[in-house]
Amino acid sequence: MKITHILIAFAVLFPASLSFAEESCKATKYKMLDDSIAFGTPFASAKRTLNRKFDSKAVVLSPRSNTIVVMFHQPYNNLQKIIYLATDGKITRVLFTYSDDFTRKFGGTADMFKVLWPKLKAKYGEQKDLSTDEAKDQVKLFWPRHEGATLTLLADNDTIDLRIDCDALEEAIRAKASGSANFGF
Image 1 (cartoon, rainbow, N blue to C red):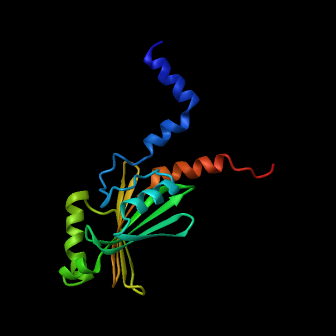
Image 2: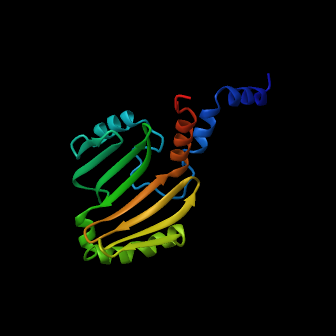
Image 3: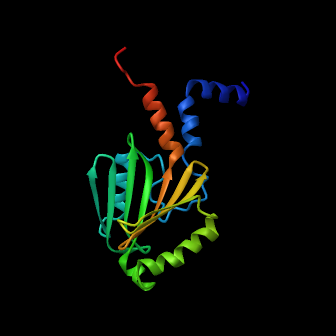
């Protein structure tokens, strides 16, 4: 039997596994600041991995059924915390919060933002959109989707966060869930 016949049979029998590979955001140019957990990792597995990896370095909490928060005792790679968000049991978003110590090296959040923004533009190109909320004194910069993922820089008076969303995976999970939903008719 030819390999093409096997691949076609596999695609027909297991179509979800092929589409999942395409939507894992592995080829995105947006770099994870910590690669402990890949997009698509099951929630329970991610929590176990993070508990093992950061055993004495951090507190690993799960305040909601779709959220894992890793809060470091001491800055880890200049990070204060990492938040993992899941959709239908799979990790689809990661939020990296820079530590206060690292931010102070630049003179505060505003000064760090002035340094970080040009670096992100140099690495990933011009952002797609800019959103400000003067009431919250907050700025959000959005970079365009690349290989299924988007990048967002969030800054306010106290913190600077980088968020990477695997939109393609989240969309695939939601489409699969809506396709199998039983509405009773």
